[in-house]
Length: 113
Image 1 (cartoon, rainbow, N blue to C red):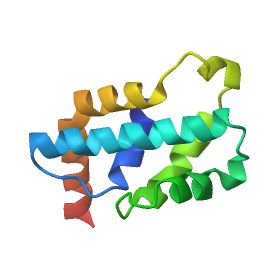
Image 2 (cartoon, rainbow, N blue to C red; image 1 turned 30 degrees about the horizontal axis):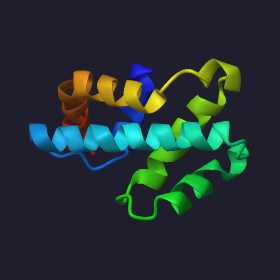
Image 3 (tube, rainbow, N blue to C red; image 1 turned 45 degrees about the vertical axis):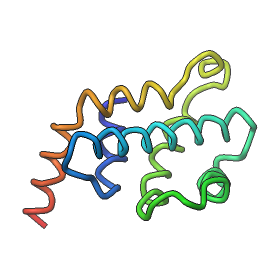
């Protein structure tokens, strides 16, 4: 899951300060939770990104780019495996724990690009 979170976060513009890190990680958790909700509501995988974006039109730019990876990850599970799991909370926690590393990766990619 750590690599998925890293990949998805790299698609989003990332702030540089701790309070903004909390906001960015909260958004990441909300995104994962929204994808999980769509899956549990039996939204077809092909329509999941569209469904999540339509339900959350105020999300910042870049979210749509990150969602396909999250959709593939969540839809790779059986629904019964996710029944008692809060992927949104797990994602936010993982993001916060690894935020500095993710930001260093993003800085390296920006410098190389």
